[in-house]
Image (cartoon, rainbow, N blue to C red; front, side):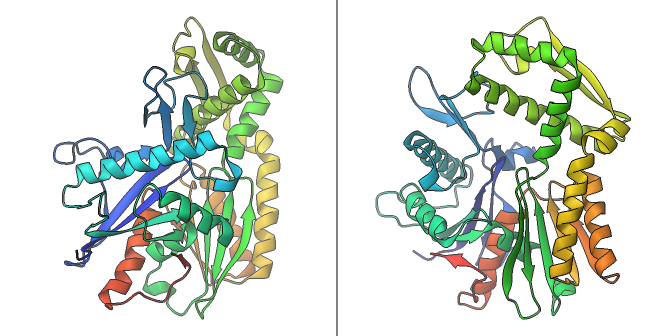
Amino acid sequence: MLKRYLIGINFGPEKTTASYVDMESMSEPTALHIIGNPSTDRDTDRDKVESCICKDKDTGEWRLTEGFEYNSPPYVRCGLKLPINEISESDQEAIGAFTKLIFSKIRKNQPFLIFDSDTGVRNFELCIAVPSIWNDSQIFEYLHFIQRFIPVSWLMKENDAAYFNLRDNDCVGKSVLFIDVGENKIHSTYYDVAGNVKDIFNYPQGVSQIELAVLDYLHDHDETFREYEKNILSLLGDDNERNRNYLRTKLRKYIGGQIEDFYTSASKCVSLDLPSRILVASGQGFILNCDIDKETLEDNILKEYKANLRNEFSRVAMQVYPQVVFVTGETLRVPWLAHLIRDVFSEANPNVKVYKYFNTGHKVSHGMVKYALGGAKEDKRIPPIRIYE
């Protein structure tokens, strides 16, 4: 069967997205509807699914979840893109189940996609994104693992896919530095004028460090917060490491949402008003309530983190002299980060152009199919940036 469609899926650590192009009409990338009814549901969040799955306590069946249905593991698995050789068999089971569920829902909501699970006959090629920091061994091991569940044609690194999606005529013949700001890391890739690719920066402290810094500050300075932690742990049943990690993860995500609201609404303080039932279904009767003003947040809590970032980016600016810098990822909710990057690279090269790209939801999945479509237009595979098949 002729392959008419190109599909790209990005199983992100927070959200999963998917895109496709029609090679017959040479269409632009379009987001695939993963959940809901594509003919009646216009909510754009239906194009993004939280990368989280849970196993029903009674039936043992896996299903998608928001992560708050059960108090703690082993029933819930989130953040499913991990090196296969570094995770347990139960986590491998969860990754396989999540992969199959997403693939099944995509096909159900896009009936034009044809796939025969018995023969493998299909009318599409499928590409999956992998973390930029993975080495070749980790990538090929993941490819062999994931092909047990869905018909993957090839893999592509996230930063390469995002770069290909963002580049335009302004980048032709110019050196480009691509900075991807993530939850857990900040990764930079340099593309020189000749098209050579070099990973030059992998800072293991992404914007989740902001939430962690706020958590540490509250724990050290706020009696109400410490009492709240104690009450939640009692509802979870025990003050052990597993429950403490669960509570910390959920609080971090909640604080992250409030940080985004704080910056986008131009508020004067970060307001934390968290009913206990959000974390524990049976929790009632108390609320976390505390405020952090902007000066305390940026000049005290985040002072060390901001200084460390400036030093790291200054070091990169001394290694390479890009003509164009793309900043993408979690920069929308932390505007000072994009400004810091612009200041550092402008000091090294006053003529550098720095672009902030905020529409990040499908930047990777769009980039994968745009890259493949470029080869389809020439009736051959274009020279790969870094393709693994």
